[in-house]
Length: 433
Image 1 (cartoon, rainbow, N blue to C red):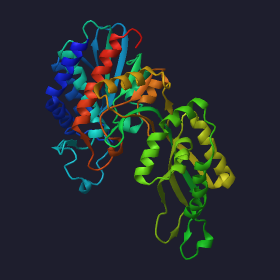
Image 2 (image 1 turned 30 degrees about the vertical axis):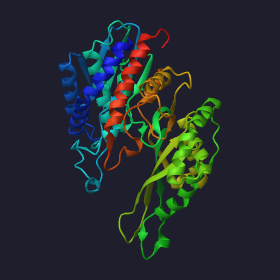
Image 3 (image 1 turned 90 degrees about the vertical axis):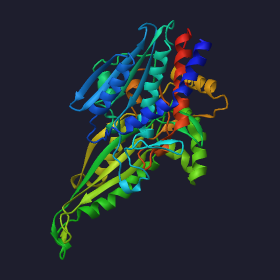
């Protein structure tokens, strides 16, 4: 296997330009969510794999939301799941970009464009891994299968992408999964994400009564009511939550990274503990009023709440609901708009984390490896909910996701392909994984 491994990694270096071009091609196919239409980019990926002799299957959860499934290997033995999404967030203010957002421009050692880090770079790394393994017949003699899922809808919680594939039994099982989200930072090294917060989006509406602006005492100002209660809602961030010991142990394992980040951005170290172990309550939108000279009868606020693992969504909703009741239930209504559950890996014994760690060290012996606890959600939650050990690991800088001038370092992309290949070959060659 050692000779095969060396030849395969040499091929990665030789095909660097092809890998880079694949990322650029994917970026040039817009797949902005909303609306999340992935038909064109999914068609490109399907053709790419079919031309390599790799069969694909297409699934459409609703019109425009297309997923691709591809499998290589012998179909027996261990199964590794590789997952990536091709929907991307909107470009935002186009004038903030140094390059055309869908150009896929190669410049200063990076590939630029919307989705470069989140996560068409990761998808290209998966596809390149399949391509190079296939071209070398590198899985011959190994008992195992690679199953690749390229999906839509991750940027809107994933229930019509990865979640749908799992619910419908398209993805049935796996010994481990790697979601190729960007986790490599030039400042801190190779990140392996082992846990992530859940999310809850709430809409709080206040009720009042309209009146003329010159006679406000005849009305009841809904905006002012909202302003009085929102600071009290923010105090929920200070609540001490009873986290399970396992969760606390894993959170503490990720703390060194956040201490380093804190030093870099001036975030006080004493606040890191609460950031990691307590709720985050973000007031992200406020609206109300119908005219400049009318006392508003209605106002509303959207709240984005991030929830540590070990805490139920229902428990958090009840905290908000109880506070609203205290403020006067008839004056306010609380609506749950969306949610995703927190998810957590099985800890230091996770085969997914072990596979990636061993492969990183083999490819880059001087590598600095850190464990990540993400405040955002990913499709890892669906695999973990089915008991499949899952980590996030891939090319791309997490701090550049969703930003103007999103880009991915070419060397990180190449290293990620080498790490995937190394981990896959080692894992499928071993008896115990």
